[in-house]
Image (cartoon, rainbow, N blue to C red):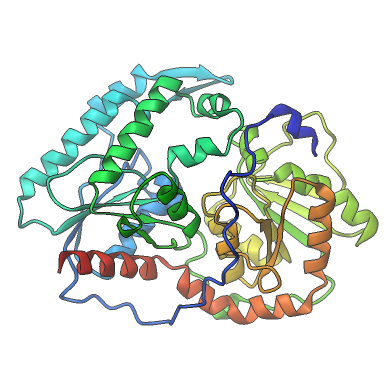
Length: 420
């Protein structure tokens, strides 16, 4: 238990589904050259870009589009909400929350209807010969008159199932319960109409199957890295002892973000580790500007605030262990990014995290929200030379596997088989 547990009772609890069995992501991976082929399908790409396309969906949409363009012909038909109609939607749904003006316009019925019209107009303008299929990023944006596929890292029923208090989760999104119900119904209807659904994890695919979607419609395509894609083998180094520099990479837009990613657990584990393992152990918290409770921050903890991708890459290089025991994590690209830099990880045995972090091979997984359990896991990994040797040797292949070029190749290969 931590001091933050009382702030978010029932918000993030163990998902009702059993954990996915840990599995090495490299088990079936063979490095191959990414080459554009003439027989690949011509695609259109649809995403809700926002005002900063490079950061839409935490950079995933732009990265996936770049990857697809390396293996086939792709046209961006996504929603670029910069005109007066989109601005009017933002203003119409603006509300003051937690001292800030925020807008949940992208989840509104009006935005859904207007966005669907824009996408269908793009499709109609190109005609049947324009492209073979459409790939939608992050969510099913609209039903289209040609084969469309959806690439997702979440679905609303799975998120709601992870809460004892789903109403609080819904409120954190800045939307009403009735609107959430409409979003769930719409998402399910579009999933059923889609030619296929690409999920970022086995956990997400299993969750969708449990909700009634046929396994034949689902394909797992683990994503690429957004902040460490320029890693090279020369940048990877073996961490010699003493290893004592812990790294947490999260964000602090809301207190609940820190809680969701287990930042409070990591902070509470530091005094235990400094007392019982190494008095010089330190924790760097990237993405956290200040501690959001009255609890005193322990010695050895540094909060850096928001960091650029280049700064995060440098932090991976200068630290010894990534620790992020998220209470809910649809995937967790930071674990892949860290390992691509030779950095082992401590995560939680839940959601998709066991698909990236394998105990004894690349780090450790904890079972509960207990600082003592986390401290013990951290100490064990820091002292395990074999884990560090494993991660050091595997780093180049991890970087190759968790690339958007590989993900794009997987997606286009599936679509080509469906269209054949």
